[in-house]
Length: 328
Image 1 (tube, rainbow, N blue to C red):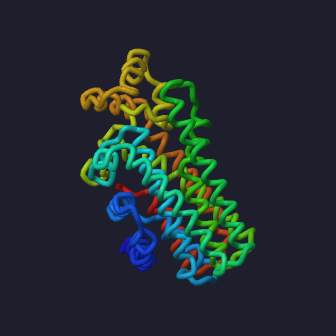
Image 2: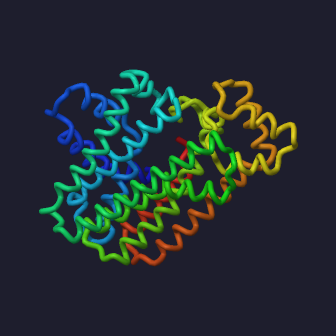
Image 3: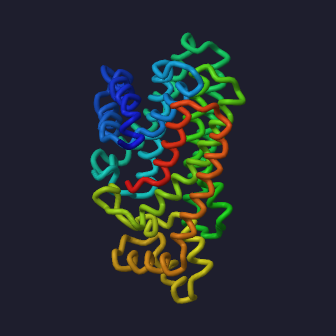
């Protein structure tokens, strides 16, 4: 049994809860898009993490359900906007929302998910009290700022390809690490944790988030399209900054560098993509990226060692391992 299967009860709590925030609201088409995207599934890692963090610190995971829903709504808002900004055609193996409904409606429903996520949090005042709610809202908003800064770095790279590996790591912390960190932090606060414990969990999961995104970037090159749910290698054609790209540009022969650069920000060309992936393999870029991901995962484990031994602590460590070593 995988750790995700073991934690299936948390996912079930999310699946039974999220629709209440999106049904019986108008206009129908606006909420239909949100429901259609979220109902496609996904790993639900962030809501699972949020509820597990609440349990880890001695709280009731049920108390964290609204926060978990808000985090998953926010995550899906970012996916919807990313797909529009990247011109992506597939999300979770199906056409992206802008292809189904058009950019204006899809964009607006992304904004809707963003707004509803804050609406849900603000509705938790009576459950958590102002002090705990303020901690969660402040952290949630810092995550929001970090994420859009990271997206700006990502988009800007495509027109100004001057970025190094350290800047890629900073981008990953902002775009991916921040949401994982906030999921852990808010779950811990919902469970009654003090600031020190909640912050340690946040730091742990920022590290996991960086490793998660590196693994996701690797899967974009090495995964199976049917399982992965997106075109293999489309990060290359979209010109996304990754550790593998930085490493290959540093280590490749001049003619190979030219081929790589000629493949960025261009229409998807399967032959060129296969050739570029071959260069990444030859230069050790994929192996290097895995090594960096492993270092961030080890840093996360070191923080987890400071938590008292419990079933939830062990589950937290195993979830981190799964997140980074998954194949889909």
